[in-house]
Length: 260
Ligand code: COA
Image (cartoon, rainbow, N blue to C red; front, side):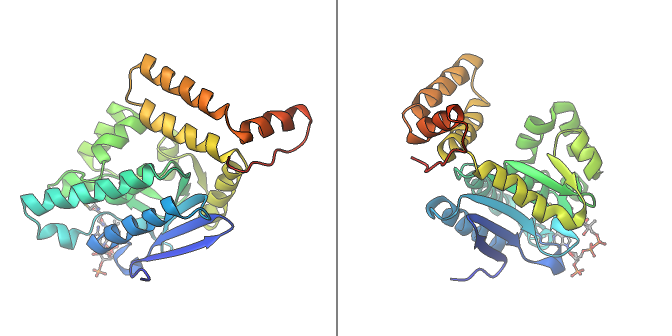
């Protein structure tokens, strides 16, 4: 089934997922969330997909939040259900095992900021704007904003953004560590691809192990996280890619990784 609210294309191992509701600034309605879940399932299962770029259609918005028209009609039970469903889709994206870059081409507000934060890395247009404005609507974040924002930028800065609902520009997002790079608007996709291509030149099992170790280790005790790291280190030592990578260094040639 083709998607109705997403554009998905695959070129050279990189899947580009574009939220495609530009007339509503790519707001996340129930269909977008469901289709994002289906797209992530493809990412998990298709070996041809080695990395992912998530972006928004049009020049104005990455994603301007959850769809306020839908939220306006919800009650406590379906509201909780909406949050759980979106959280599950974003968590699945975060744990898909392949590197995911958010190419933030414009407004990344509410659910849009939360979607960008569920990606592993963020490249922002100079024109991008970030924020968690939910409190202005009398509601709180539902797709991980109170959870991932403090982990990315620290509790004080996260609380400031969450409590004021104020928007910040790309330069400030960079300064507080919310985004990895800020680039001219017309370079967002190209620079996201370049970042991803650099990652894809590395050993894919090693890249996957870094993703897993950071994801799982972040909330462990220091000792548990160090043990997890040592286990991955040992596990990777059994791969052909590790033999190839170390041999290539010693032989002063470029490694050819096969993901085994
Ligand atoms: N949900 C539903 N529709 C949204 C939306 C959202 N989160 N964000 C924007 N839209 C719609 C607008 O209603 C408008 O639709 P219309 O043309 O049918 O009236 C269209 O997208 C364009 O938005 P508009 O507000 O006219 O653009 P703007 O340039 O004046 O303002 C924003 C841009 C991003 C500042 C403004 O749209 C906004 O504040 N959006 C909501 C952000 C938010 O609170 N997100 C968190 C939601 S929980």
